Image (cartoon, rainbow, N blue to C red; front, top):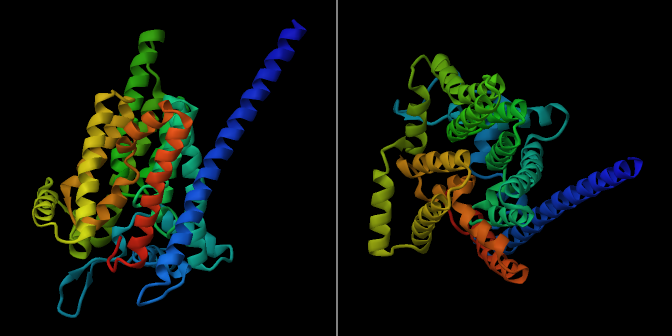
Length: 391
């Protein structure tokens, strides 16, 4: 009996050591992608007509909005220009990331340093959560492949910038890991924070609700009782987006205030995919501009990849999240060149490549992912150095 106990202890320690090595490898993969991308930003940025430091390029565009929310708070109403035309303002941005920046500033860090540091720490959390999710669903090699493919995607440059994608990715992947392993208190908490990080948190909340329903049905069939923990977790996540939109409505005094601010500032509105279709039709017909063409191809490839993934019948909550998130991305009007960034956390589009890499020979998988990373990291660096528009 004592011998069996010692064997069990050794196996448990061995499993823990293996898990730690797996996580360490995932973080190492992330580090390679981030260092490689920063070097590309430095290299490309030095050849532009307006040289700027790598640090400055990590703090452009939306970063300024997040910093203003963090340091000055949200405005108390609409913002108008000198002609009385409604403008976008800070109320469009969800609160989790600005709150963390404000906390970093409160402990003595410069706000810009806090913003980038938080994004980098969140990227590490995202790498760990992605590895755990891929490992839970398809095995350890799939976990590493998911980290490598996601963190070197064409818009993955935002994982190094003062943007909210790294936090959102860490939270949504962590939520799925917790739900898949039936740790409902963690799933509910992470789901709530996910929903308070970006509007597409609504898709994550719906996915958690699906996971909760599946768990409740399984427990009821096996034990004849209703499990309340999954339902409470789903309820917490589902409350996030309505809470923030409701708070904006209360602060401004109009029920659709957040939507009006989004449309006025960024042309963002849900038009059921009309503008996306027109962009694809015009771009593919005229071939005008290689960035436009590349974005069009990314959108089409992502659609095809999602179809392949769904044909493979992935875990239902992940499928629901991917489909709803893609409907939100493709169905809204707005800056077309921002869509690859919005697709980055939609993990469904990556599953075919992840599964293929996990089943291929290691050398083939490494070569394929390296080629993907070389293009994706260069593409993102190009967008924040040479490309003059917002990402």
